[in-house]
Length: 213
Image 1 (spheres, rainbow, N blue to C red):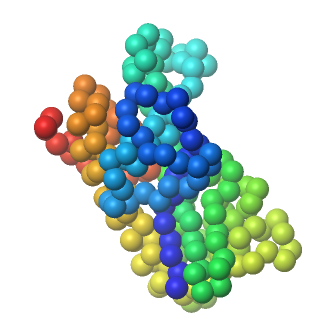
Image 2 (image 1 turned 120 degrees about the vertical axis):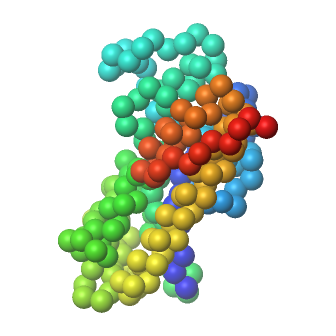
């Protein structure tokens, strides 16, 4: 069985207190979907905000606010093009083989996978490892690390990959619906811009933000 999931790189932050987050290992990959609990959604929002927490002096954005919440969200809300570290994870459960997004891969790159099934037939996703997807006729070969001559690989039909990518897009959309509701409850003064920034980081349309409970 082939499993494909959009995953977000998570680094544990024991001292984070701005909103509830889930316990996590020092480093892990969090699959994004509509099945996450509130604390997991809080963890994902924390991590995406952290990915964009860059001092404004670097690019001329407005000064960082002095309040802790505003300071932490500043990059997420003011960056021109938000980023979420991660990508698509593919697991061949029968063979025990997993393709992981490489270093510097972003979740917004999930649309590059469409080049494999409907475009030029080739795409890579980060480095160290360097995952590579290539279409060969009616099949797609997913090389775990293209820098290794004897790298393991996963092979599946183009039609199956297309269906898995459609399911991953639904997972991202479902996650954003959860995130919009979470933001309305936990960040009511910033809910709409936070939701829009999260959607931009995933290269997805922003869902409507529900009214404040």
